[in-house]
Image (cartoon, rainbow, N blue to C red; front, side, top):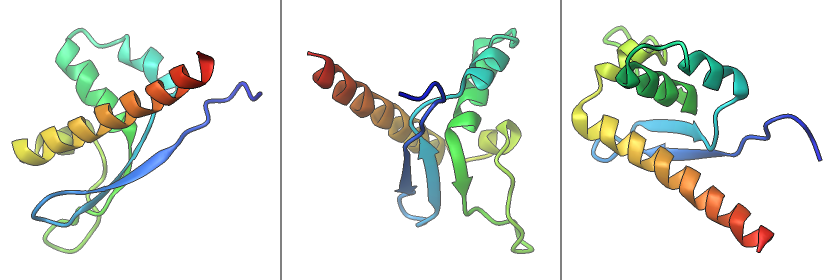
Amino acid sequence: MTQFNELKTKEIILPDSGAKVVIKDKLTFGTTLEMMDFDKERDAQLFMVEGMIISWDFMDNDKKPIPITADNIKKLSPTYGQFIINQIMEFIIIDKKKIEETIV
């Protein structure tokens, strides 16, 4: 058994736009520690979402990749932001259920 956080990934497609976002199933310990430094829960949640996204294919008007940052996540439409959060939560819950099933 490894002591390092083995990550699983999942590609999701945003409705209507067809944009691809790759998410992971858990945060690293370092990201978790960094979240503790935030004064506001909302900022910590945004940082968590940023930490769960591995890649996306959003481009600016000049066809340059838009970096995955909390500020850019805030700029997403509410529909896309909520969809990404729902997909992350579903991915985490499904993985947790699989772990629980193997323990029982």
